[in-house]
Image (cartoon, rainbow, N blue to C red):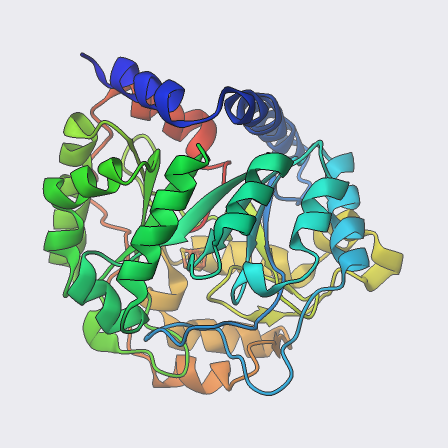
Length: 398
Ligand code: SF4
């Protein structure tokens, strides 16, 4: 059986037909349209991404090593009006897909109201799954316009070492509930220098498949935040191994293996540098990406005209020039000191709640997913097509 038949069989068996239809109608088709409008904007030299990440709150019930979220004292959070206004603005430009994250988005009391009030949009909710009880799964099923992406960092010992004792078992139980509820869900795994062999093993992929997930999304560890743990960062040789193994896994895996680091030709991608996606922080700041918490503008500037604010931002346009003149990969990893100088020159505000300038200064240049001369193109037709048309739209996050 080829990949597409194996994958379709799993979709039909595991996901409720109603939810599957909603995903097709609200996620897939509008996603293609949204990218087509984005390409027209690029041709017209307009800057407005097809996709956004919204950190609803910075409150979190976990304290994972290497996390960049600072949750101290009173949590910051977007108001429901801000979120709805922002979504309405983005919809005018064809955007229908939004990634909701935190902190922990299930701590945000208006989460379901936002989904209900925007039934013509599709959401991806990135969660640690600890609050995914029977009631939350039942509501996710009833509302129907979201896929749940559960963060899990490998098997029990690796996961619990980073995310906290007992989290693996709690996540496994949440998988059971999601499976029973026939919810469309995926697993997000961060690859570090310590876990990459196990996290990229066929045993792990098969185990994730058995839990009922439809997609497995890999992130490469970035040493940012107050506890950056640089020893977990990957070397260039490790990153090449990761790339090779991803290509191998795609040939044997029955579920989707997602990365947003490389395009169909194996060339590196930085979504922020390409204007594919920006991050809206919990105080409404328009940030370059989730781990790069610096901003000049907010979603409330220019009377809330978000298109105007982004399209006329010297800072966001300046970042494109800055990043693309240095690397196709990740400037946070490759040139943190030049990045700090760029941010200062543009009078960017540190919106992290920490001292993110000092963190950049203390950081050393290291390898990212930009591997010039050693690019490895996608080897499967399905993934080539997906990479060209969907992966860099449906939640671009380098
Ligand atoms: S590649 Fe780095 S700078 Fe670019 S979006 Fe990803 S994390 Fe941000």
